Amino acid sequence: MNVIEAQNVSKIYGSTRALSSLSLSVNSASVYALLGPNGSGKTTFVKTVLGLVRPNSGKILINGIDSNDPKCREGVSYLPEKFNFFPYYTIDGVVKFYGSMKGLTGSELDDRCHEALKTLGIDDLVGKKVKECSKGQLQRTGIASMLMGNNNLLILDEPFSGLDPIAIKELKDLLRSLKDQGKTLFINSHILSEMEKLCDHAAILNKGECLAQGSLPEMLNGKSLEDFFYERVKQ
Amino acid sequence: MMGLSSCFKNIYLNTIQKEIRNKSIWSLLIMTSIVIIVLNALLNFLLQMAGEFQMAGAGMELGSLPLNVFYTLIDFFSTVIAIIIGVNSLKSDEENGVNIQMLSFPVKRWEYLVARVLGSWTIVVSYYLYSIVLAAVLFSISSREFMMGFQIFFGLINTSLIILPTIVIAIFFSFFLPKLFAFFFSLFFMAFVSYSNMTFSQMTYDKFVENISVMKIIALPIHVLLPRTGILSSATNGVLYNPEESIPSAYWFNLAHYVVAIGVLFFIVSWFLKRKDV
Image (cartoon, each protein chain N blue to C red):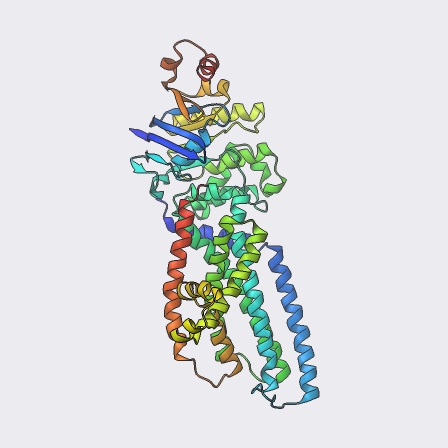
């Protein structure tokens, strides 16, 4: 079953065409990477999927529900490109807020929060305020928040941004374990080396146009992702 | 399965947590308290000096003057706070990149708007309640008269109603203008709403046509389409100044108009929010 189904999605900002008739399908329990240079339209596409941006034309379905219907976002978690929250919130406060937005309460909320903070290795930062956090700590908080609630589709926009090599390795392991649990991961990234090891499907986007898409081994046909990407984008 | 109500409740509570940290509101609250205490002492001193006497021409007792002064002051500050919070309400979400996260939850945009508006409204009504109770208690002590009567309750209801469209209008302007501009524009606009209401509340069609002007042409749709906050405010003043007088029948018509107009206002602002890319 397709978790995300986008059909001919176009978005124009003024005179800039951010997305040009983009169509793609994301299978359940897969890791799908949307790759592209900066400004290629990756974030616009994610925002369109989440109903944050209205496409000029085309249609997006999440689990068969139109993306304009907020119900489609039940069971969806989103990590924005630059995770941030109100500066006076504590790290655990942010994670708990996400949990409560997902309907968790009481001891279940506390336990899940503790578990998520521990998974991300930030349980020692409980009580630390958002305004006092480094970029990497904030990013980990965002990922911990994303783990709250039982979500089957995780959408991550540049998840490795701001993370040190240790955190990148830990995040990759975490994403793999989430995939093993049957979750669907949709990841926007321009860090090809990390994505090559992680994803099983990919699409390459440049200037809003989809240059290639499909199963990664079939698409690459023996080439490295970096070479394939460079070849397509520079064409 | 998570319910939409959990999102609504959390956004509502988050609004209160967010706005309670607003330094401008605390400054205004402290300022209001100081002004009320100082004014009460000053007016008490003047009352003792002058004694109770009828103010010629004004048609009211000097004894009721402090409460009216306090009411006007608190009413004005409530409007200012409502605009500050209204402008900040969605704009600060945008500034902190929180709007993207909030709207990625299964919450409808109108629910997000209503939760933010109600959270803001709760803060402003709390400010109003605190100020009016402080003023009434101080005045009751100094005048040895119990001032927590019907007029205070009537004022609370009306001010609560006035605050709601003020917040929604401030939010609307914050969609298009930077914070400071949105604040002053909202303040000016609410003053113009009052002017429109005062102009047309007593005016017949013949009088309108007779003395037609550009200002009146602009003011008419505002009077017809928006909640008549100016009339609600003037009804409160009427009851405060003359507690013996009954509520005018036109008040009930304007209250019914308010219900429809606030619905339309929410619908329009929500429509704009729905079409906004975040």
